[in-house]
Length: 288
Image (cartoon, rainbow, N blue to C red; front, side):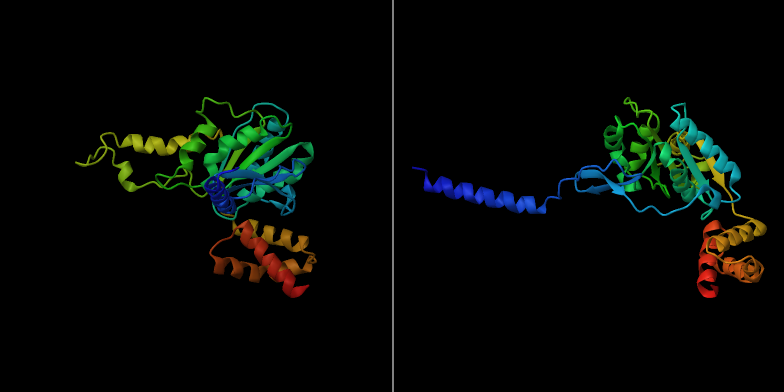
């Protein structure tokens, strides 16, 4: 006959396990490999690829006055899709000039050729190794995209990204490229005191120049750098006209909207493609 005390202990243990299980995150769902885009999700110690089925539409033709950057990025992406050598990409420069939109437009243009997109947050860059393992045997070609990337000193994802780009003993596989956008050229904060390499403080580094080298080393591991610059007024107005046409405004609206478009840009402190698109939405909502 079972020991009553043992039965009580077993019941208590089962109760504790049930409470612990309630606090644990659910098991990650199976990956839907039919999707074109994914978002890396993390909860506790578990991470998984979440399929994104509703993708914000944008086409390569919608991105104007970044022709050189667009051509270079397309060439690199086509080489990647065809199994030829390709570089990881860092896009830096003025805000709202189309850096992130270019990545989404690449997916729109080349998804039928097997291109896929994985969006990852900066805080989760330590999971890059797990992502590489998940897609290692897949036939698709994956762009791992980190938007608005920059690091403060001491952040953990910094070293994980360095290893994934170039430096890890494990090969990342030829079906993965990393693309990042940033407003910082070297991804890390830089200080005036770091330029004073000849001046040594009593409690400072013996070789302060090496601190600068460490900060530059991450951005140098991206094989392809693309820089984006603020638009001239004529370019900005051309982008406004393009988005007015996309939203169904007839040609006569273009000249009528010119003065308001310039005032809109002045109030926002930027003549960027993002500002141009936001103005076109507002104009179309008010005049159509």
